[in-house]
Amino acid sequence: MRSRLLDLLDVQHPIFLAPLGGGPSTPELASTIGNSGGLGALAAAYLTPDQLIYDVQSARKRTDAPLNVNLFAGGYHASTQDDPRPMLGLLEASHREVGLPEPNLPVVPPDPFDQQFEALLSAKPRVFSFTFGIPLASAIQRAQKRGILVFGTATTVREGQLLASAGVDAIVAQGAEAGGQRGTFDVSFEEGLVPLRALVAGLANAVALPVIASGGIMNGREIAEMLRLGASAVQLGTVFLCTPEAGTSAPYRKALLDAEEDRTRITYAFTGRGARGIENAFMRQMAAHRDAILPFPMQNLLTRDLRKAATQQGKPEYLSLWAGTGVAQIRAEPAAQIMRRLVDEMQEALGGPGRI
Ligand SMILES: Cc1cc2nc3c(=O)[nH]c(=O)nc-3n(C[C@H](O)[C@H](O)[C@H](O)COP(=O)(O)O)c2cc1C
Image (cartoon, rainbow, N blue to C red):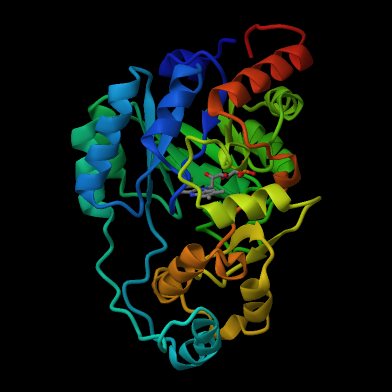
């Protein structure tokens, strides 16, 4: 399979690993996807600069294939005028359930983006991708001058146009079906819930850049459909969450494998941003208290102890179980095996390898 984007990247298949922040992202998973002919990714938004460099080096020990390193570029509320007391009150009962003391108001550290970005530049992966906003044009240019390709995340056609004006090299189209936190930055999260097929077709029409389709894609037939709609590649997250190479916790894996049909919903409860995950008790409880939910990253910091304790105790009802709408198709298989199956299914659906 060849295309302008794949030629630029020197990658064989148009199948990219999504950056999977908060635990599932590992150098092992990224390098396995690279060694299987796809583009591997490291989620670095929750990493310190030193951890970012360490993870890139760990991946490089396992593969020479190109690598995508992902950061959060925006949406960071270092301070908030919102009253935290209603949320602290609501969290008390959940804390009691897992044997934690009363929740305290955390101190929000400064936005880590600038320091992470310096580490990324020194690690020099083939791709810098970002979500939640757009970095300064000077940062995009600095990356490109170092030979790093820059991918931005759009959830609407207009966001794609803004990214194109900012000078990115490709656009990740994150459809409403996508698991995890949403990249929406120009409209409300509700308005940013555009179904993937409409988003890819709209972006392919409106923007003269490669489009990478992301959200709910679980098999090669769906990959072929995206390529036919005008995408140059796809970016998959959920399909790889139960691989042995992923860092997904045991209760999270179990909930993913148990999920039938589409049990995913959009929630703001865990991080303060709109995100898709398997519905659980915490999501249901917080849905009635939308006004009490604090912005990112305060809400994320506030629910961290709860999620950590719930992971240790195997209680999925208090975990952020990020997953896309295709979660019922998930399988616990090695990543290389999944890649082989996706490539075979895609080529069969496309009628053989070729140029897209
Ligand atoms: C557990 C998890 C963590 C994620 N973390 C990130 C992240 O750190 N940065 C990012 O740009 N996207 C992140 N995403 C979103 C993915 O990039 C992608 O949009 C999504 O996985 C695609 O939908 P799918 O999971 O149905 O394949 C995450 C998704 C999941 C499921």
